[in-house]
Image 1 (cartoon, rainbow, N blue to C red):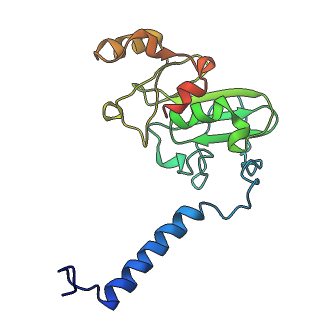
Image 2: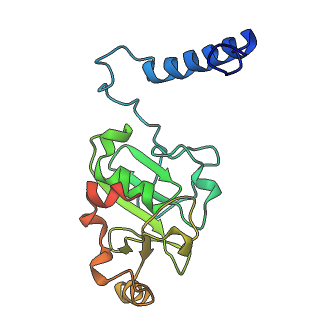
Length: 190
């Protein structure tokens, strides 16, 4: 015991505490390996896949979603795909990733080329549907859907989307949007 009545700090405890403290401090101070000012650089261009553009195709087995890096081929109950005119296609594991990409393709490394076709997996049919004609429910309770992460719920028919929101007290018709209505606020949910 020391003068204050507490046990003295052993050498081993002191070294361990100093190591943990230094590790925490280093983690907080060194947030990035990038030199300061380089964080605004353009993202790496994504790899696009040849696509006929007139109908959906199966996602390649090893293709990674440009938004979350998951494998869309593993998510046939929720994946989506988008075609850039004259450039090729990219694939997503969920409608949530599709929303994020659609709002700002360049942010995810996508080309400036016009978007010519988009498909997403319909909630009820589990078939790929035309996402430009679909109605998306901005679902906030992900326990109600089967998707790899937070995601809007796509319906081929607006009436089906309305029936879906009427099942829940926390959803209204205001939570139904079209893909063209997707903006950074809607995408930020996912």
